[in-house]
Length: 91
Image (cartoon, rainbow, N blue to C red):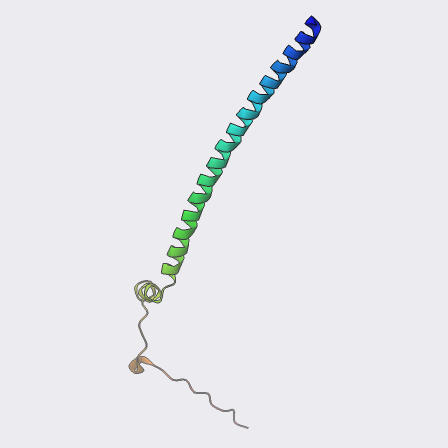
């Protein structure tokens, strides 16, 4: 009977240690899951910000302003327009 009690005690201790280890692993995985969810949220926010920045960068007003300031371009007018005509080759 003492041997059976000892076996049961060892089984109980092994079961308790296994339970503690499983709970620790579960808590650790839950913490990693929360970190991953936070990172996903941060990346989503960053993506939205970059999409907005991209839309602003290609807006016609911004392109026009950059063309005027950096490239010294100006809108076309008939006064500065030059027309090019093709001459037919003489045969």
